[in-house]
Amino acid sequence: MPAAPITAIGTQWAPRSGPGSGPGSGSGSGSGSGSGVHAAPGTAQSRSFARRAEEVPLARRFVREVLADHPGSMDAELLACELVTNAVQHAADAAAVTVTVTRFGQFVHVDVMDDGRAGLPHWREANGHDESGRGFQLVNELAHRWGFLREPAGTCVWFEIA
Image 1 (tube, rainbow, N blue to C red):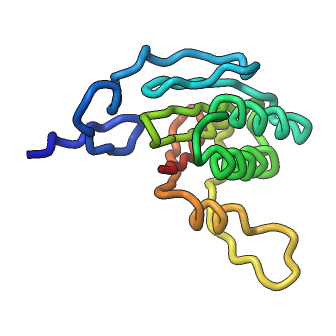
Image 2 (cartoon, helix red, strand yellow):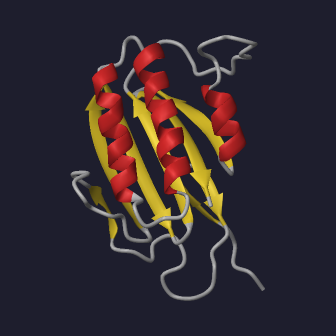
């Protein structure tokens, strides 16, 4: 009989049997420098960036380095880049964007949080030659699940890949 789902970071995972396969099985969470630090299963790595366009490549590199040996690393890197870019472009009252990458075996959860309080993330339909409006469409196609949370301290847009 499978165990009950575990709620973590606002989402649910059904635990797998065996050591090192579910939430809480790793060494906990901490902040990574993004310089060659790989997230071990069950751990989280976080890094904050200024809400400036020139910080987007640094956020992308951070995700790439944390997930270097993960088969979904390229998708996670692309989606995180889209969400950080959205925060830079649309969270006008935010000062910082924090990216947190959490691994649970082959499962990855990424949070992109900004400290802005104005506006909400929303779906846009891009047509024809539009140069923007495809970010959430891309997230919707590549992520297993995604969503956002609005809190008094800011907005968190998250996605999961397996």
